[in-house]
Amino acid sequence: MADVWQSAMDHAVAVARKAGQVVREAVQSVHKEAVMVKSSSVDLVTQTDQKVEKLIIQSVKEKFPKHSFIGEESVAAGEVCTLTDSPTWIIDPIDGTTNFVHTYPYVGVSIGFSVNKQVEFGVVYSCLQDQMFTARRGKGAFCNGEPLQVSNQQDIHQALIAAEFGSNRDVQTVEKIFSSLKKVVSIPVHGVRGAGSAAINMCLVASGCVEAYYEIGIHVWDIAAGSLIVSEAGGVLMDVAGGPLDLMSRRVLAANNQKVAERLVKEIDAFRPIRDDAPLTE
Ligand code: LIP
Image (tube, rainbow, N blue to C red; front, side, top):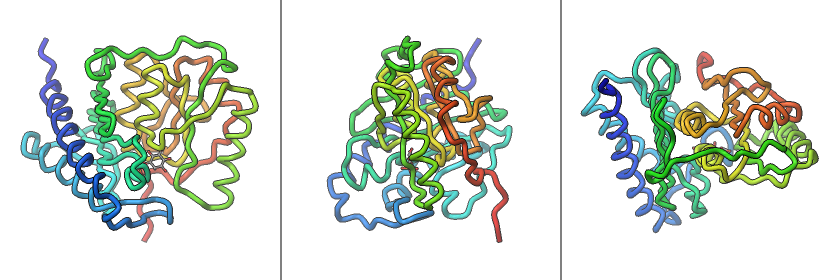
C-alpha cells in the first residue's frame, strides 16, 4: 500500500539538507552574527535560526498548504504551541544554537511530523557532520541510509549516559539538575556526555553510542523527530518519572531498553517545568 506520508518525508529530508547548507555557510561568519537571548541569558537565538525556520516553513507550505506547524522561533515570536490531530511539522531550525554560536560541531536541523498527535517521521540533520538521521514509523531508523540499532547493554554500570544542563539558571532548577546528575554519576555509570543538542543526543542513543539520554527543560521541537528515530532503532521513550513520554511536558528519557531507563528513573529529580502547551499568561 502506498505510504501517503512518504512524499512529505522526502521533502523533509531535502529541506533539512538545504537548511543544513545555510547553517554551514553561516557558521563560517557566526562571529559577526548578533546573538540574542530568549528565556534566559544563556538561551540563545540568532538571525540564522529565524532565517532557517522561515526557509523550512515556506518550503513545506508550498507543497502542503493545509498542514500545521510548531516551530521554535515561531513560538518564540508568539505563535501558539498546541499539538492537534492535524498533520503537523514540528521544527527546530538549529538545535544546538549555543553550539552554533561557538562553532562546536553538534548542530542539528530537526524536523518531526505528527498526525493525530503521533510522530510519523523524524529527520535530524547533524549538518556540521553531514549526518542525516531519518525514521519512518514502522520502517526503521537510518543514518545516511545505514540502519541504526540501539546498544544491547543491559548493565547500567557499563552505560554511557547523555545529559544536559539546559538553559534555565534559576538556583532551584540548577540544584535539581545537578542533584540528578550527581546521583546518575554515582550509580556509577561509565560516564556522562552531552552533545548540547537534544536531537543529536537522541540520535546518539539510536546509534548505540550512548545507552540513554534524559533532560528536563527541553521543548517539543527538540525531541519530536528524535523520539521516533530512537524507537525505530529499537529504543524506548518515557517520561523521566516513568510512564509514557508526553511530547509537550518538556521532559524526556530515551534509552536502549526498559531496564536501563527504569534504573535512571530512580535517580532523576523529576521537577515539572511549565508545559509547552500551557496557556499563555497575560
Ligand atoms: C537546546 C537543546 C538542549 C538544551 C539546550 C537548548 P536549542 O535547544 O537541544 O538539549 O540543553 O538548553 O534548549 O535551544 O539549541 O534549540
